[in-house]
Amino acid sequence: MTEQLRQVITDNAVPFRGTEINFEALSKQFDNSSVVFLLGEASHGTNEFYRIRSLITKKLITDYGVDAIAVEGDWPDVYQLNRYIQGAYPKNAAFRALSHFERFPTWMWRNKPILELIRWLRDYNDELKPDKKVGIYGLDLYSLQSSLEAILKFLDKHDPEAAEKARERYKCLDTAIHDPQLYGFLARLNITDSCAKSVTEQLIELNRKAIAFVQEHEDVKEDEYFHMVQNAHVLKSAESYYRHMFRDEESTWNLRDKHMFDTLQNIKGYLSKKRGKEAKVVIWAHNSHLGNAKATQMGERGELNIGQLVKEAYGKRSFSLGFTTYSGTVMAANKWDEKGKVKNVKPGLPNSYEELFHSVNLGNFILPLKTGPVYKALSKPRLERAIGVIYRPDTERQSHYFNATLPDQFDVICHVDTTTAIEPVLDEEPKHEEDLPETYPFGL
Image (cartoon, rainbow, N blue to C red; front, side):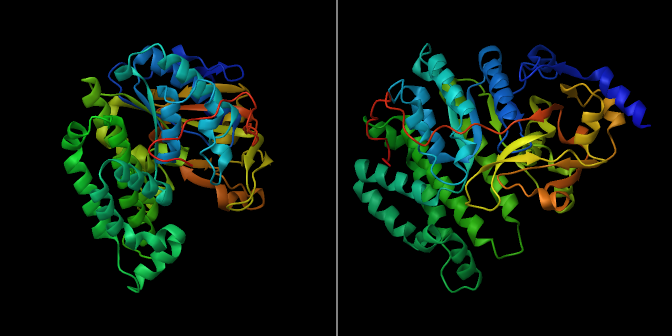
């Protein structure tokens, strides 16, 4: 059976060299009706995954009219990249735009492929009218302090009375900002008041005032107000996330991925209205977020992810691609908040997709998973590896493998047999970069 399985893979795979993926073969798996493109990664520190996603993303923008990229990053930090590619910063200030990513793990975004991508996006956008420029946005919810600062700075400048009201509502977040886990623990014991009502009221009020506020304040652009409201959305979701840390009624994983999906919907809604057509978005996140959770052990535990929610909402109008690798190197840390290191990736375990794909001796390839022979051949669950920002080779089986049914998880898999660690950009600022103007709506 194993030889037959290898033959099915060999007959249907499309090999490629290096990171030059065959986009023509890949594009046969979706069409112009697709509006959400999910591009995963099997680790947060692999050079080839970033470069292949960049190549695909550029083609989706130029050939399929994709309007925005949404990434597994915090809204305020990614918004600085958006401002750069939209033309708010000097053209040679790409490195400075990346410098806002200061929290662990910095290498996820302050790396050479991302630097090259945002420079390409800036060049591409410079040829377009303002309402046609491509955007880049963050999906995550870990930016309590910077999101709060962004809201208050915006309101201080444009509506001081509303700023004071917001400060009063957000006062209950003091503990959460300085020690989110302590806030969750105290809320669980009812020692501190929940901030849920206050953050919800603030978000509702900002949403309700959106149109009138922009009309009444000629100096406020619609993009700026949307950015501010999304920060309020982050605060609402983050408060719920930390409050549920020590509760059992809903997992924080589900809350986080629901927030990502809601943010995607907000981005699509905003851009669709702005462009007068349904916006198309490409998402960058880990396989564990973008592969349909129903096809993995996550689903068995009652966990969902943004990939599942997208498939349920958009069906065949969405497309998902996952990644695997057999061996190589990766940028990862031993523990949270430790410095990232280049670590050796152990060869894929027996009975894993990684080991199976290595055994066909094709090197790098893409494999459509929904075609009859492939779907049938891979319909039984196997082990699949997931490396995040932490990699523990000594406990790899327990720490990094889970059971999954790949054809139900993704539409296409991209296997890079031997991968290399991501290349971080230097911490030192290049001398040729110009000084940036004070960032808006907040300066750091």
